[in-house]
Amino acid sequence: MINRSTVLVLGAGASTHVGYPLGATLINDLCNNRGTGAEGEFPNNWTVDDTDRFITRLSRSGYYSIDAFLESAPDLAEMGKFLLAREIKRHEHIDRLFPPSSSGWYQYLFNSLLENSKPKGFESSQLSIITFNYDRSIEAYLHETLRARFQMPSKDASDIISQLQIVHVHGSLGTYPDVPYTTICEPVELYGISKNIQIIHEVEDKDNGFCNKEFEQANTLLNNAERIFFLGFGFHPDNVRRFSFFNPENIEGREVHATARGLGPIELFSLVARLEPLGFRSSNFNSNPCDRFFSHVAALE
Image (cartoon, rainbow, N blue to C red; front, top):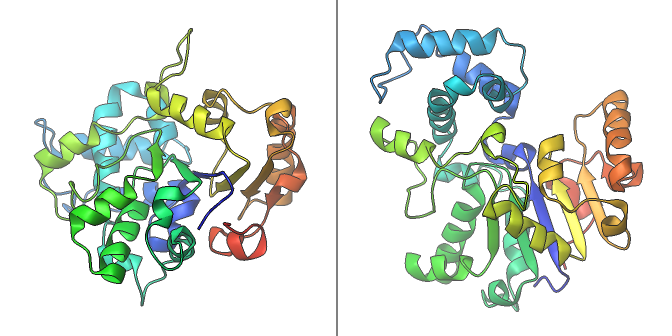
């Protein structure tokens, strides 16, 4: 059971252990389909030539992520979100969330949410999750593990998980299990799902408040948190700013940790220098992967 008010802020690195690619790999996966005829069918009267032109422009743009590319090409956002959703959907293999595949830190999270080995800990838990990821792997893992552990109907598992606050600030591929966690999805259905995605430039700043209700929810959660843990988060300046929270006064007195796996010394130095005006210090960052964070840095308690 988690008794201390804790917020997990998740970026792309938080779900790589269940098969989801980081930005550059996602671009490579998409580009590998160019010219092969493997793209499949398309909605909205798009043709293979249309998508091949998109992929060619993306591959030669020099960006590290599809989101960053679409920020520079808003006219391609509709097609880009569809192709992005389709690539993510291709990784929705439910068995990859469980042994013999690695459940990673999801397994630790699930067991930390129990109280006396019972699911009532979900209701009283002081944990909340803010995620920038479109995938629903956490929800799917928790849902299916509840069903298997306690032999409960899907509806009961959904009711229990609904007691957790999981905020997708940039949208998701749909609510689980209402939208099945499967690679099978008709193009028209997937096109509708892709409209739930909000890339960075579409999350518009408001002069008199938050850019969307999800960021406003996130701000409330952060203000109420005793501990803030960033897992696999890239600290994009716009994303950090839109929380309307991080400054030295707000960080002071809170326990803040962030994974920095894969960053070289120069990259980490640059990141810390950029975030120092907001109250971050080098001591807030560690080189552990997400799967070792809760055994080497901070436990959920």
